[in-house]
Length: 356
Image (cartoon, rainbow, N blue to C red; front, side, top):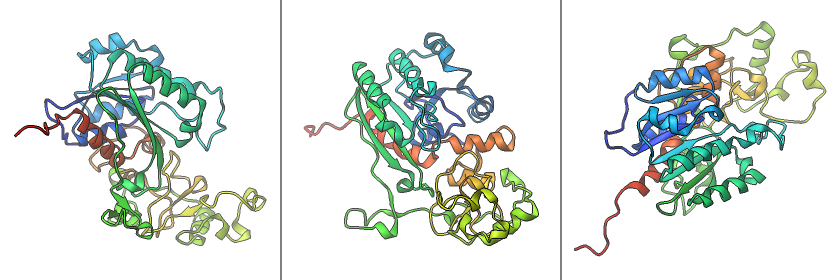
């Protein structure tokens, strides 16, 4: 993968980096990622493979001493710290356990902010975080460290991502008032006087329309081998359809008894619309709207990576399941790039209005 950063680029540390979605986007925006951390071995292998000059710490961040990490990196401060502390404790799909220990990992994140004193920081998480008690504590702690904090829920589809993914983006700055990026794209049905000049939202067709309908096994364009009954079920679901399109004789008993609920389960994508959120088990149609718009199969790993806006030349390390997890957990690269491009403006010298 080609790097787009320069020698004097602003520096960045990515905590809870996963496969590097935020890192790729911020590098495309002009930052240099000097270090990253994650507890997952295969994510770290992916990071190391794609970022030869980045220090990657593999392990529990609770056990990492920032001072020793700084010595390993060779810097005692950076321009920005970014990262997404695990969100399962807040997730709409989880049990939303108030005492889930994962809810407290933001403290470890801010421990590194307190040590490195970056000019800015960015925390990415599920939208539910902003309605939690923890968010109030995050904001108060960051403000005590001298940061002005701004939070907002961003829709990835409004930034060129062919996916209806929504994420909470918390920005802290001690060098000026931080801003979230303005949308770059709008749906044709939502066009008005304020957004009429924006680009049209990207679609599933834009992202994967050039890939072979029959997976060829190249570069993670890998399909599953469905059972005969699964194939029958796939064929019953039209574009935009779901489990309710299955005839009774091939509908699982658990679905027969559940007459209400998600309309995304066993759903088929549509070519000319964005996908819904790509999660870690996108290869299982029973987990969401993951059937290919036309072929009778779930989307492949490459197709999911495209919907997450990963570059085709980004190298993933691990098994099919491990790589799928890395892709589903990532921040869409195009969204990260737009955020990075907005934040890097605070680091650039501003022209003096009173100069001749």
